[in-house]
Image (cartoon, rainbow, N blue to C red; front, side, top):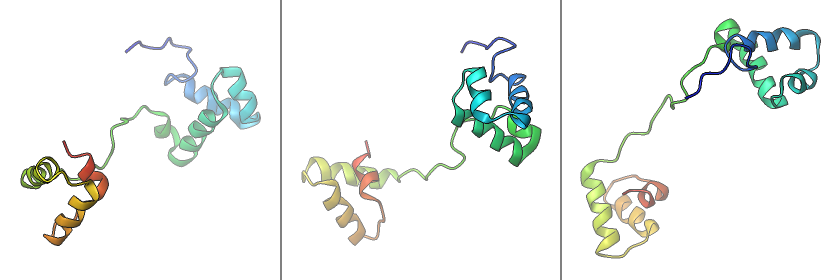
Length: 112
């Protein structure tokens, strides 16, 4: 991943600069000057208002919560119903519900 140069508008040093400019100028003008979108400039301003200086620090884009994985036995059951019985995701979801297994149709259709 390329490292931005020191004066790039969204590098860690550039974000406080954007916030300082937004204090006495409209966001649209600051966005035009820095070459980034108005909504993105506004997002950084909102993060600064909510979290202060910590809001301007890079953070992970990985999801904070991940749904639990499906049990291997249930995956095997879904694959069998799909391949052997040729059932749709809706039918498989209905059948699993009858067996006490609660899965959404979307999770059944995306199961490998």
